[in-house]
Amino acid sequence: MEKQKLIDTLRDCLHQVYNVDAHLIENNLDERCINHRLAMYLSQRLETDTLRVDTEYNRHLVDMKYYEDNTYGSIDILFHKRGSDVNNIFAIECKKRRILQTDITKIHALLRPDFNYQYGVTIEYISKEVKLYQRVRDKIEEETIEI
Image (cartoon, rainbow, N blue to C red; front, side, top):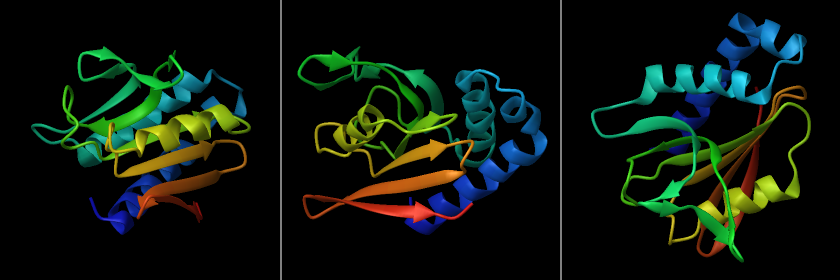
C-alpha cells in the first residue's frame, strides 16, 4: 500500500469517528468501543478477498504474538492477511489519552522482518495526535499526520 493512500484513508476514517461517533469520545466510552468504529470504517474502505481489518488480534501465524522477552499481547487494529506474513500492511495502537512507550515498542516490533508490517500507527483520540512509523534501511522513521 502506498504511504499517501494509507494517510488519506486514516484521515478520512478518523474524521468519520470524530464526526459520526463523537459521542463515544465525548462521553469517555471504552477505547475498544472507539477502536471498533475506526476498524469498521477502515474495513469498508480497504478489505479485499484476502486482506482483512481485525481488532485485538493476538496471533502471529498460528502462535501467540510475542514481541520482546516473552511479552505477548494483542494489537488494537491490524490490516493484514490472516495466518501469513506476506501481506501485513499496517498495525495501529490507540489510546483515548496518551500513547505509552509500550505501545510504541509493540509497533516497532511489528515493523521487524519477522512480522513484516509495512507501517505502524499510533493514535491518541483526545489530542488527535497520529504518528506513522515505517522501517527504512534498518531505521524506524516517524512522521506526524495532521488530522
